[in-house]
Image 1 (cartoon, one colour):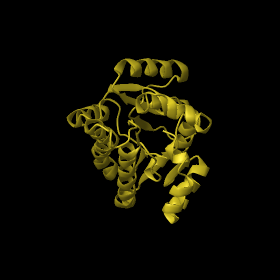
Image 2 (cartoon, rainbow, N blue to C red; image 1 turned 180 degrees about the vertical axis):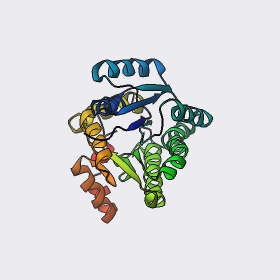
Image 3 (cartoon, helix red, strand yellow; image 1 turned 30 degrees about the vertical axis):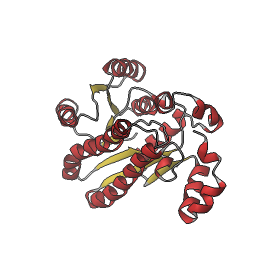
Image 4 (spheres, helix red, strand yellow; image 1 turned 120 degrees about the vertical axis):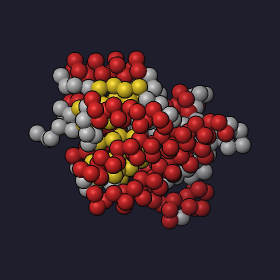
Length: 261
């Protein structure tokens, strides 16, 4: 049986965040749930405690609120204990041609997807460095490697997450801290209800949507066997690697596929 771990998940109230929380509990670990909606978190926490007979915790947190991040993580240290794993899952997208995009939407995505993620990471690192152990898992996207039309703002945030994570990995390696990037393609969650209110993109890519359970299982597996990256699906990762080699050719051949939004 694996050693019990305290695992913090941001954006845990729905989607892969909620799925991961249940999988963590199924292993006998302690899930610490964070999201803006405390009502959804408490419902999930009660469900987990009833179904898996483990202690779960819930904390209301908006990762755009930097002072609140420090306050909440300090509470966790006192009420739960040392954090073994931080899964930075909170994030959202809004799909627009950049010509039509609102800068407040772009700023909001950066504040949540990038700055909030970095702030949560920064607040847990000192204790992990002192213990010389820990694991940071950042949920990025295949959009971090291969951008598409109407995704300029969102892709920019995920490029930033990938760049930050790659640098952080090198910085903390000697302290025994693992750092993993997760780059999934589109997932079957409520993400698109915000990202594309028309519903057209989700309809266009219906057959390619990844099950939330599959993505969550892959992420949780890295806690016991840490890896540098998780890339899903495999064929999309092949496309991103080809793009690095021949971007103009891939953009030309994939023009129709890149314009599904």
